[in-house]
Image (cartoon, rainbow, N blue to C red; front, side, top):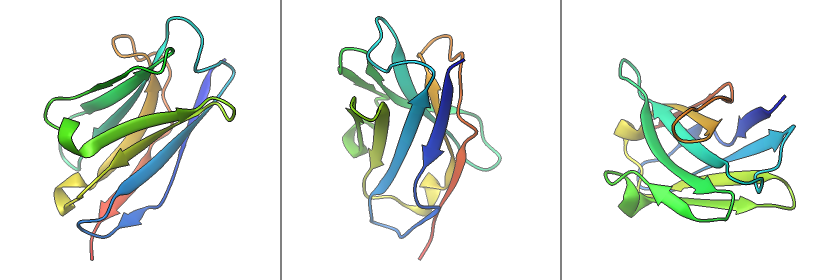
Length: 117
């Protein structure tokens, strides 16, 4: 059973960089041909796919967030990381990591991130 767990600060100041880590257990992030996604849900809004990193290390980003988003990985720890720069209060959301892009078959429990001074 694949399990994902998000971790990172719950409060970030405006203009700073939000950084979250997803730790994966029960499966390797380098296994062919899986992708590993970051998704968020602002309060009162729907889910927004932010980007993903592939088993190969290739990255893919939502066009609307591409200029501020970076996804990387640490294969030795079986983790992948989200960095979102120049955050504003509109980036306040519950952030999820999940497996794949289309099927999104496994999800973390989500972590609340609030952008506020």
